[in-house]
Length: 376
Image 1: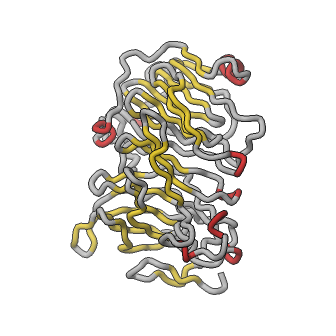
Image 2: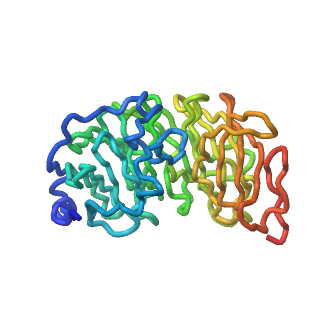
Image 3: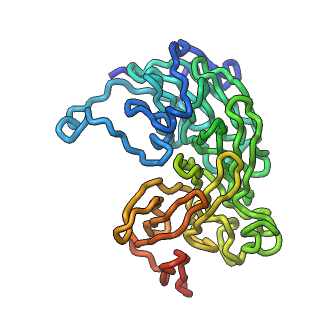
């Protein structure tokens, strides 16, 4: 098995000598178009879950139950980084893009494991975060997009790893940071922020893929006077949490970008009375404007850290003999949810428990709103 290491290169990068290290530039790079993202080729993996709908499914059949036991390692690559590596490899015509903790991006030859280029964004000396991981890059055109841990959006040249543009997302001094892979729709690269533990006010923001200019910014915690603003008391909304630390999904049919929103801040619900929208919810956004077209909250006034950051899969199904343009989500509250989608938003259809849970006394069959056991 062929083994690779980036130890020497990373030493130089860590000293700030080489922000981008090109060992062998990518030749004949195949630009990633909107059409390819909408209908990805089965031999490629162009986004974190394989397609916009979030299926995480490959239709390839070369590896099956009869031959999977014969698989052996061909090459391995050591990133030189500690901590958890949570990024799926993003593959475009033989070029594999992988991220590691602390803002490291690698471009590898998928067949050999050879390093093509690497990019290391140096973190400020006063930066700190609870989680230093990264969950992958996004591809569009001839660029690779990184949501930097220090709350900076970065676009790299896919052939060389050189920085094309950088755009600040928020001030990391106030608790914001980013760990998710971006989502690209209609020429806009969308990201969400982490930092709910530090009392930030969560949001999703979109940037122009070519220029890096901010297009829109939608907070997950509404202010007074906005829809949902009355679910908060006093100034609780200013530090309400609602982080967005997992990549959203997108439905090309309805034009909805679906994002999961984390738990409210502080953790204990008694300290922030109310439903606390849009925490522990799925929000459906217009990717062109950032308008919230609809939402569904899985549980209100979350006191259990059941943040619902994973977006629902876009899946059609049947309910009572009728076809439903649907969404399916496995919730951290122990229930499997069936939702419906349309151009006007999303709504509740059904929910079933998949593990024992004694917090919910019942779920309203019409709205999906839970009633809590008073002693829990």
